[in-house]
Image 1 (tube, rainbow, N blue to C red):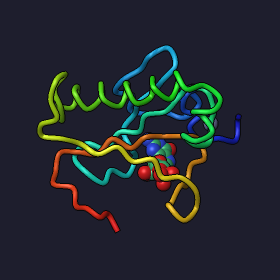
Image 2: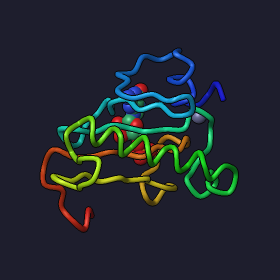
Image 3: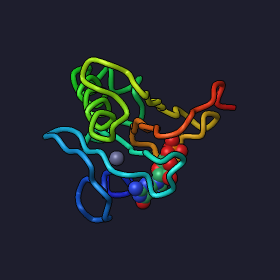
Image 4: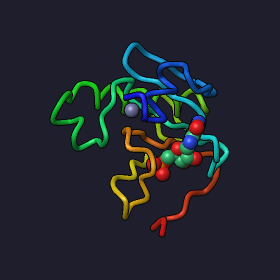
Length: 119
Ligand code: 5GP
Ligand code: ZN
């Protein structure tokens, strides 16, 4: 999808600060960070939402979640077998939730106290 911002990042047409990559996933820092760590984790293949991806390729959704956890460990937000200090995964889905890029992305947020409910 050439009109998709994140497909263009995958294609190398738009630069990104990549922090983690596997054969099927890519993770890069959000250009407008909302926390000391704010990384976006995406499947390299275009899927609009997690709900659509889990129907099409459930292993790829699992790979995205695993990549997000690997990023959290890399950023010092969790250990292999623990959750300290912790992090938040967010998948804004649809307009009312504020999804602005229609290529599934998990926000990995951490490095400060995260309030709940988020508002
Ligand atoms: P959404 O609102 O769809 O859940 O999240 C989209 C995210 O993409 C936003 O947090 C926004 O800051 C980020 N973003 C938008 N354009 C770019 C870009 O060109 N590069 C990077 N790295 N992040 C972007
Ligand atoms: Zn895309």
